[in-house]
Structure formats: structure tokens, C-alpha cells
Length: 212
Image 1 (spheres, rainbow, N blue to C red):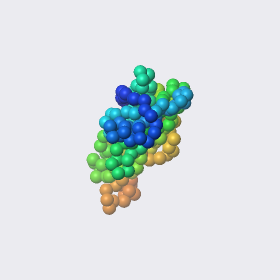
Image 2 (cartoon, rainbow, N blue to C red):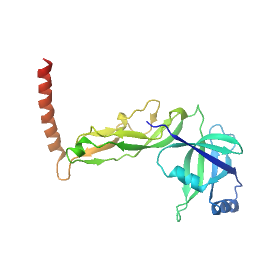
Image 3 (cartoon, rainbow, N blue to C red):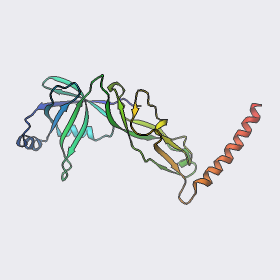
């Protein structure tokens, strides 16, 4: 599990009326709000639009070191609102992390390697699950989950329960399939499984003989 990247941001306090927000957006600054379990009063500020877009450019979970009026906050970008026409970010919510409070977030799942069932058997890889919802303390936040599919044969799958989840509470079912290897088009899975069962039977017979 990769640890999150730390990104430094500079925030400038702002007024909260519509005119002020419009002027900020024209200056390519995004209105934002800062909140959290130990924040007594929400802080309204703005950040550079380009800096925000850099955070959004990768699916990885990132932690922001946000400085406002000389005070530094460790935050997570929790929500971004986009203009429906231009797709530019028009508002952002930053959550201040607290060591003693768990946070809920979606972590991307990245596939690594080339599955055996694809390379050797011409199978097809499907990834029905690209994010996992988790609840963790800040010290256990991860940037992404990596799944090595190299050993997977046709008909085999990788599930949430197969992930390394020390210190992490998954909010999605452990039985959910992250990735599965399907047979080539036109080939029934049963035929593939039968062939593999025959191979495994022969292998196990040889192993028993050698052990004796």
C-alpha cells in the first residue's frame, strides 16, 4: 500500500458573498471552505485553480498541507464542485484531519502485472471495482491499493478480502470482486475449469508420489 503524497497549498481568506466568489473565479481562484471535528468555526478561503487541478489530475489519495494566514492544516480534499458547462472547479471542501478521528474516503485500486490467464490462455481481464470505500485514522490513510494479477488464471478472481487491510475498515463487502479473468470470447468457463482440474489432478498425483 502506497502512502499518500503531501501537497502544499496556500489559501487566502475570502468573503462569502456571490460577488466576491464571482471575482475570485474570474481571477482563476477557487472559493473553498475548511472544516473538521476539531475546527470550532469553518474557515472560508480561496486557492489557486491550477494548484487544485494538479491535485485532481491523479486518482491517488493526497494529503494537503494547507496554509492560511500563517497557520498550517493537514487536510483531505473531500469534495469538489464543477461548472456543468466549462467543467472548471468552482468550489472545494477541505477536511482537517485529526489524529483521534477516523475519516471516510474512496481509495483507487490499481492493477499491476499481466495475468497468467490472459498471457497464456487468451483470457480477458475485467475490473468491476475501481475504488474501495474505507474508514481509517489519518496515520493509516493510503494513496491507493495495488493488486498484482500475475498469478490469476482463467476463472479466478481477486476480492476485497484479499487486500492487505491492516488498520483499515473496509466499507464495501469483503466478498466483492475487484478483478476477474474471464475466458476468451466463445469459450465456456466450464471447459477451461475442467482442463485446469485435469492438470491439477496430474500435478497432485506426481507430488504425492515424490513425497512418499
